[in-house]
Image (cartoon, rainbow, N blue to C red; front, side):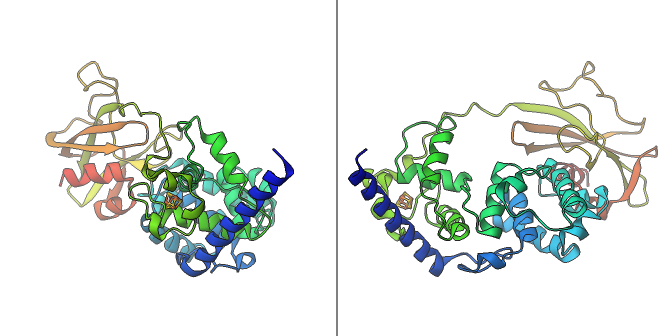
Length: 352
Ligand code: SF4
């Protein structure tokens, strides 16, 4: 490319950036973990980190009460580091993706134990913390420390794929989208830039019906010019989610308590409290299914079935209910309904 063409691209980029940052200054969403535009250096890294971990695979409205609850109970990373694993898991219940909760605790303990309670202020330093991946490191570096980091989440991928009308299909296009997003990052307000792109993706450049007429960067958007913005990002068709089957047993003691077990540390919902269940298998359980027998002998009645969708599979659980006794963690039912992962709450409610 000639120096003149490169100069032209830089001018276009600067104009696009100015338009989006100006829009962000006026329209930024007010979020409890966010400092207003232009005040990045005062953003608390603990709050930014916590919010970013909670927001992975979770919507803002769903994550917000958890964020407020966590920061009220544990106002600093040192407070969070001191929490018992089981208390943290119970507080996380309902947010899903429970590996994140274990990573959260590992990271908090590393920051408290090895960094004097102070988060590293570079992307590389953050990435070295346990349980912190490339996205979280970039987001915290940019938002909390105003570092020139390339923060690419699903919203940003969508916006960039439209701005540049990327014809490569996701997920193969990820490196290309990342490079294009990186080409827009500069040392000028990188924290606000990251959040501006996220806000644009969340409120204007939505997956369906993008509001192009309200968009501050439509002038530079190739997808808008094409007349088919919704066509992007192009995606490889997903295979249908497989389904698994299992049984959940709701055993009550007649005194308002329900039998719970701690799930193995490894695997889905690892380390969480849950109802006793059979293995979850790809065929409907029968006598040959591993662990298909109830956890104790009792007068079990069929309470119906519930469905739940995890990232990689859908689950149908047959729910069996009985009164009885045995070697379990007996927990008041009201407490269990608050603290259990959603799939078990559904099963418990089904057996009412
Ligand atoms: Fe998205 Fe439309 Fe804006 Fe392009 S013009 S970035 S498609 S909202």
